[in-house]
Length: 111
Length: 117
Image 1 (spheres, one colour):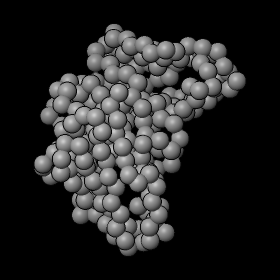
Image 2 (cartoon, rainbow over the protein chains, first blue to last red):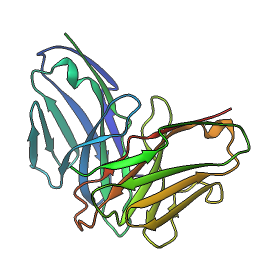
Image 3 (spheres, rainbow over the protein chains, first blue to last red):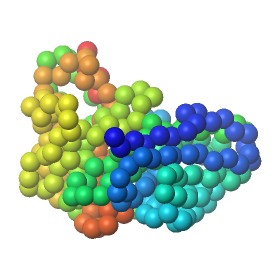
Image 4 (cartoon, rainbow over the protein chains, first blue to last red):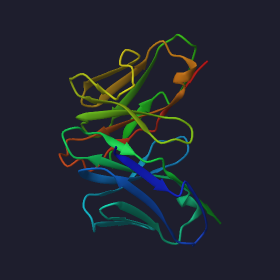
């Protein structure tokens, strides 16, 4: 069964304390891994798409990496405004367009 | 970036009534739209996928007669919750994909909070 698991469920960081969020997947035929940020009561906001192992993408304090089994979202020197739930999702190969989401990591950055 | 809107943002209805939620892509043509529901502290669960001009594809366990989806144009999809019950109370989010064959991005709306009393 295809699965997407995110860890930790929740993470509390001091401002400036760098860390990483993990998204591991057991799927066959990955056709894209996506990272989103979701603020309370709002829809997810697109961050990155990764397609193949070894690929990296960066945006401000965020950097996403991908291996054959997992993806990491590295947060460098986080600020309180980075507090949100971070979701990863995978799209599988085949004709179907379904994207499966993980349960998310709730990040809290304390000033 | 691409913008997807939803209306209404919040709705409260009585049990047994129907509610329609609109999802619009504002600055691009969405060949495919997706409807998700999200319960508190849980992730997004795909309900159905709709392609413009064709019938929606529902996920297993989602009642197609209860959750009516219409994707009448390249910029509008609607979800109608028929005969709503309190257990249908949830956060409903739509997303839209443009014509990019590589499926590089899926843009999400801001969500609709449905409360059935």
